[in-house]
Length: 504
Ligand code: SF4
Image (tube, rainbow, N blue to C red):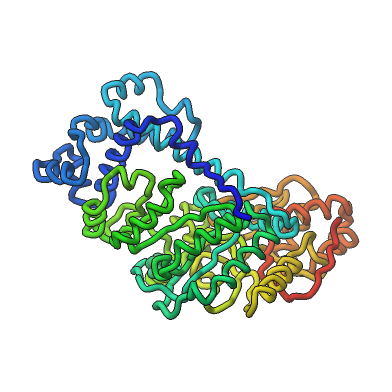
């Protein structure tokens, strides 16, 4: 039976009238030009938008006069203040003094209210970390990984919503973007809809049975692939929604294919969903998109400016990683002295599945490095053949996720963490944060153990209790804390052998 569908984006749209949304879509388009066109950006920054640029604005559906938003270049510091304060609370981002100024710029005020609402909604999605999965063992593993991402990526990690599934419907990618963080290879093959529909629906059903529909719906039907490469991509999305009850998001770099974008808009718009998201690879491409679609048609569509001269920094993974080298190598001399300028393009904390190759990886985002060039760690991998095989393989991977620190597992820190011993304990230093373990006698001796060749959990516990006379409960509490908060390296755990917990 078809499931019901949920939509939290409606919260963003609800307070605005149709007329207001019409104006908002025009301001949105203005900012797309600002972000994606270096010449236009320079003109706005200097307050010198010339006649030709104004003509172009009109041509692409921006009906207001630039003077209606002149606060942007007359008092840019105020706009900056608004946008940075937006991250705090919904009602206090505009001071009384500035609110008065905005009275003269109602279009900007409307726009700021809209993007504030959008940010609040996204923050909420990231903060709630998911509808809880039916499978507790997986859920606990996932919460450890999310804690680990937040420790490792700092503020960057807070913008990741951690879908649990990426299901690719092709192998390779036809677009071959210069910045591809996944270094996707050329398109090889696609999953044939007519021949594989039962297979696809079977996979979606297995995921729903294991995790629950709402959690399984936290998915992408692409990852290191381009959705447009599969001509039945939208049919697959509908099938997936019928089984899980959730419509999934789409990001595409084939942004100037009018029919493709029209089809996606026809799919999402009646449901008031904020997709597709478009990757824009050049200013020429941006212009073409603006020529092909009106501002209101693209009201809910985010554009991600990927041109080389874009002010938006790129995650140095995949192909760019190859150019820039291992960011972690800076760490030995520069650890935490500067914010490491990257997050991860990866977002899935769960199962990364390719239905053409029929393989599964258990993954979670991390800082890009020589070892993890695509910005995700791989905790386990396997291949499968049939739907039944897929079912048992996923369950086997979940069975292998320990619920407690396993006795035979080495007490080893995550590979991004440096342990800094101190007189009163130790600090764990990740690329973006310091975690303090101070002022307890168990911390002092544990710090030394963490610095040296790893011993097993069981041995660590015995050494701390027998040799260093530490309290058994304090030892178990701190080991459990390290484990539950994702500080420990679980990559090596996947021996596919049952693990025995030492801590209750
Ligand atoms: S970024 Fe996306 S569209 Fe571009 S090459 Fe990589 S997978 Fe393909």
